[in-house]
Image (cartoon, rainbow, N blue to C red; front, side, top):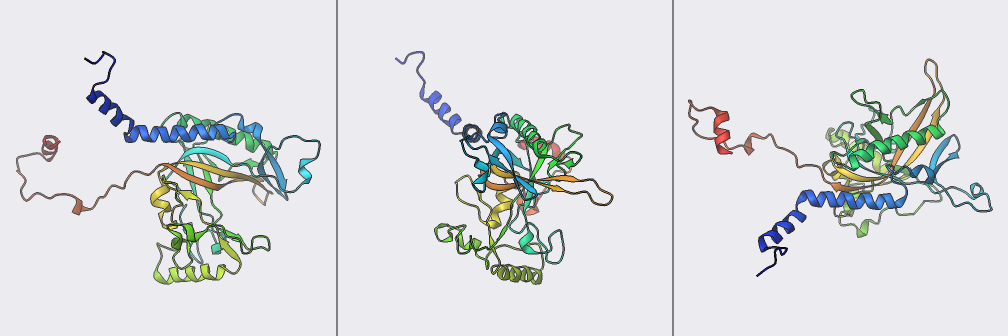
Length: 331
């Protein structure tokens, strides 16, 4: 006879089903990612992150670098420092989502004059569950602390980078972006950013297949594609390093369907540029979060179709019967 503490087959099966449920799977994936990021020392929700990074001047701008171990020599005389890769677990909001293959570029219109200037972007906010929901508040607090360390006295800080909703005293969103093109130099000429041969979707990144101007006319699409081909002489395409749950890099055409409204692990570099005052305006401290990598933890929910073809239309409806009552009985 089994002891009182033994599991019956049904109890064991129930436990197994619970462990494999989508909710538990999602929770464990987020928890595992959070633990790893906390160990890195650069998780923005860890207050110790402030001690691991420092601003380094480069011309008129600054970039956030890792703090180097103190030695007897001046470490600042030995060339560029290592960029700090800050990390966070965030929800990619559908509002202001331009993290598409071409960033919504329109030749001769929009905010970009040329294709090589395109920087796809989006805003991120807190995921709906704890502890990562609370982590986001700590992350934005630490972001503001870092911004204060390099800010110019009297300059407006964070406009276009931090966003506030519903009169919130703390930021509810911040903006991330990706530099889609890099100028070809003697140092990077001939270097490969992405080994297309080893990718299962490598052909998707070739110029003739790269999705551009998807919402435009065929003539407009061809104009942008011609510009893309011409651009290969002076610039190289830098694909967004966004990965699905399986770890594989996403095809450019999949950015919206796989990233919009997803919960992701995010790594990024932080930059600062002071913008001097102009006539009628004050000076501004501009900050940008350049994406290093995005890894999907929870994919977006499946789209809900409003197509009439998805609904079964009955041949007859009792004129004395309420539609609401029928639906209640059916459920």
